[in-house]
Amino acid sequence: MKILEGKNALVTGGARGIGKAIVLALAGSGANVAFSDLKYDDAAKSLEEEIRNLGVKGKGYASDASSLTDSEQLAAEVAKEFGSIDILVNNAGITRDTLLMRMTEEQWDDVIRINLKSAFNLTKSVQKYMLKQRQGSIINMSSIVGLGGNAGQANYAASKAGMIAFTKSVAQEIGARNVRCNAIAPGFIETEMTAGLPEDVKKGWTEKIPLKRAGTPDDVANLTVFLASEMSAYITGQVITVCGGMNK
Image 1 (cartoon, rainbow, N blue to C red):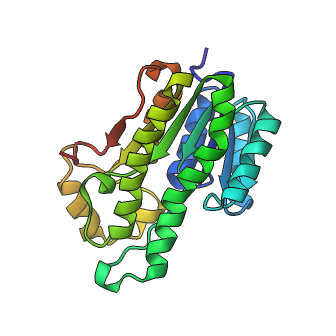
Image 2: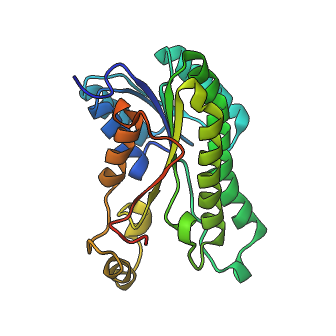
């Protein structure tokens, strides 16, 4: 038996990168998976097919995670279509990197709204279903930057640090109903977002990592599966890094 067989998951920002790896890992572990992104495009259609080829149900949705109205509608549609929401992965996020002295108000607001407010929106929208069924796992995608900061990423670091405090608070609120909430803090992960970095920059990052390599989306996805499953039934309110030992 696959460890997530019979479970229904919702992943935001799920059509590409780490989100896509998470979607496929959950599906490969037996879960039916709904995923959302700003657009329902060819990438979303292709991912739906990949999910179904794994023998489970998959459906993509166009939804703005930074909108509470959109999030409430998405949660309602997924709950109706799938019958329940057992796993929520708040993965939607962006970067708008620049030094604080050059950062615009719009760059600050966009990152906080999309990275942090989206976690509030979806958690608030989904938790009522989990509380009613007295079981569920919420997984928030933070970053090691949220633990230690990073020059040129004050907005991103603030959003990811906020997600950690949010995770710990939510875990305390909903634990009595057997609903768990944890955060994952990835380090330097090879994605479309990092592919465009100069080679010397990527080399500089990997030299700081004890394992001497960048992580992959699958490294993050594997931990997500564990936190979504009953194998982590006594783990809540925690922040787990996936960084090759980079975070000390």
